Image (cartoon, rainbow, N blue to C red; front, side, top):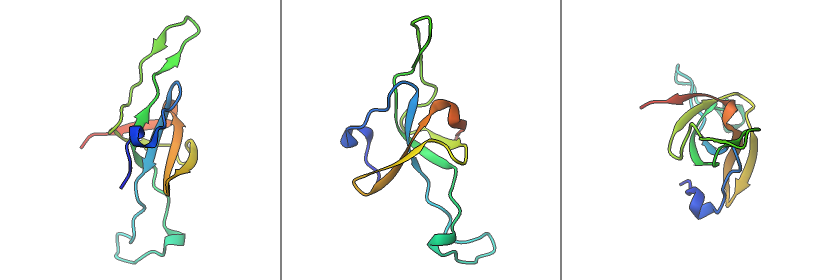
Length: 103
C-alpha cells in the first residue's frame, strides 16, 4: 500500500507533484497473460503530494491545479522516478500532467 506524503516526509517543491504510477495491466484485452518484463508502462497515476505552487517573476505564487488524491494522466516520460521504502514514485512538474481523471 502506498504511504501518504506525511508518512514519507517528502514535500515536493514549487510546482512539482509526487505521483504513484498505476499498476500495469497483467493481461491483454484478448486475455493473454503478460510477463512482468513486457508489460507496458502506464501513464496514469495518483497524486500523493503537491508543492505550494510556482512563484512568478512578479512575486505572486500561482496555486496548484492538482491536490493529493487526484487521479491524473501524464506524458510518457514525465518526471524523475524515485524509490522510497520499496515503493516507486515519480516527481514531476505540474505541466507534465495532461488531464485529471474524474471517477
